[in-house]
Length: 581
Image (cartoon, rainbow, N blue to C red; front, side):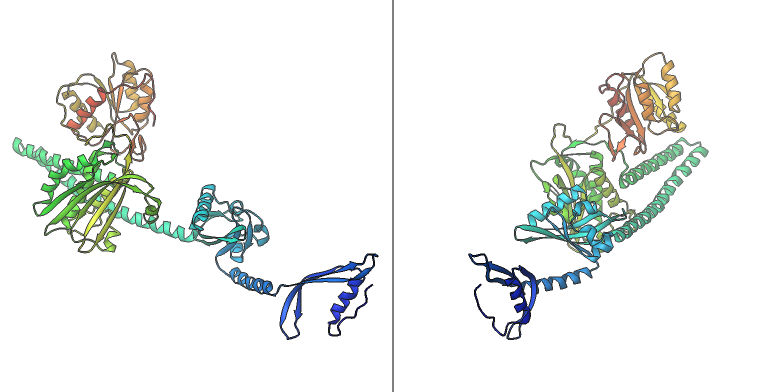
């Protein structure tokens, strides 16, 4: 063994380590506190190994040491920070990118009910029940921009689903990537928001009911009063005038009903592919007369405009309501511009317009140079019966909103006081424009019809009027008050039934069931449904199923006979085929 002496100033414990090393023991310590001769403190990681001479005897020891003071300082800092994070109210945790959880604070324990031992080492997606679609969206955003924020649904340890407001940030550490996720439970807040929306909705319904009762009471007063005067009079001129008043009141009631249905998005649509530019051009002269000479009407119509699939009558209703609204905003005159163009809504736009979806659209905008609106007014303009006009009904813009949404579109308003207002409406663009048209109905065909019609209507008075309309148009009419009665007539009738004209909703057997029951033994029979409200029958999201003919109540004699001829002239469905709803 090599002979040497230790320095006298070496601490006793190191002398002990030296003796143990010479005895053949291997010693190591990952963290060892030490004090330097100048009084400074630090940390060492060291190891002692004996070394052997060629004879095999221990000739001495090898001491390796590394100063880890800086690392310990950093770790202590992180530990203190982790302690602070543990006190945070929000859930804070870290997980490897696409992997397992490595950190889980006390806030996460309280929010989710999983302890640190239960959470660390498990996949956050599996632990919290995050949906695959939501997780995929988060990972894509983290990979592209290094962060993500939004709302997620998670599952607590007790199985309860909660909504969290989440923020994620990607952190790189060497070759590994981690995600720092901070979540706040907003379940209660969301519940309160839903309750507030429901409260506002009920308030709006209350205003709607009050307004409808007022308007219909006035109309019923005209109808009942005129009918009583006509019944008491022997003067044919006065009787005719009374009947005219009843007819006018009925027309106003029908228009009010359509407005209400559009507002509630329950109006039955008959959409077709149309060219909005052609529709605007057709309506321009009428709109000019409506606005007056002191308002300059300008069209700015894009060339190559895409087609849209909407109900033409709703387009007319939308434009008329917006133009009337603009006229009220320009009592001293001004200018009104109708603009069309193709637009593409991207994800950046949808982030600030939550109702919209990315895609190709056709925009129609109505802009005026009127008085404009403040923010408080803008927030309420689409509410039913909210109006700033002295004699306004408050249904105009509510009707516009309902009609646009019912047609699958979006509407936004941009306005400033004394700087005018712009309403922008976006309808989904359609690729197939072969059948594009302006949507004009044309005049009613007054030629006499032929054929047998089975009329099924549970309202006796309406059935009587409808039967008279059809008889005067030249048709043979068989009538029934319900589905069972209609089936008996069809089974015993000696001859064909060319058209089934039936109410959609009736006690017992409805119109749909009746049509399907008759289909096997009357394969050539056409079917025309009628209803004032068919949301639960053949209407899906306000749109008619393909190939199903429909007549909306109330209807005039001209609209009835026109629709009947149209259906009779159409191709019959395949023999025995049931109608699909």
